Length: 115
Length: 110
Image 1 (tube, each protein chain N blue to C red):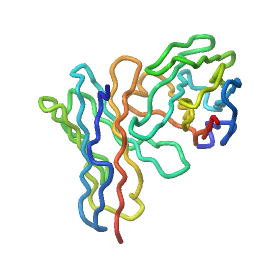
Image 2: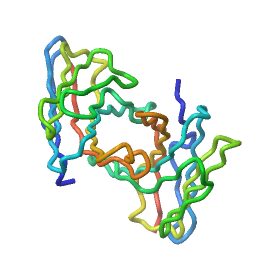
Image 3: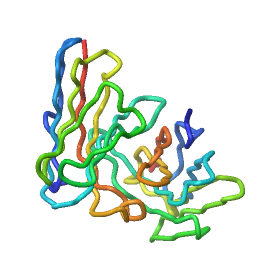
């Protein structure tokens, strides 16, 4: 979707290095989410944000941190990447909690490989 | 532990016939249910939703059925078209989190 972009689209990194993934939106939506998709697990919520500087943990938050200093940007950081964090990462946005009924808008994903 | 399950990893259907995708959940506190469609190398896109106060929601060729007593959700696509070939995820929500199933890959054969 044009309203949400993720960068980079692909990244290969070494174990133990820090990695930051960026999600940028132009929709001025309040809610932003980071998910990871893995075979056999579907999509799992890592962290989410309900406003600038307001974030909370999701289902699989260990090893990840997030920051949201501006409405349009939501950053996901792997402080010290591990092979178990090899995954496809999706960012999603929602205008309000009614995203629960009307769905989120997802980005195209970032494929991260930790070697 | 997987709270939302899609037990069929794949499904093949002839064009024009009905596709039925199934989803089971364990948490009786879920109050919203959604279906997403995902093409390769793209993010999931929202398809249709239903709240727990309803048992059916229809949108064009897509109908979602909810059976709360059985904790079962299904998506019907009629008639199926080749462009419907994708991975379909069901998702269930309580509070601020969605829980996704593992997906069913639908192939519609022309």
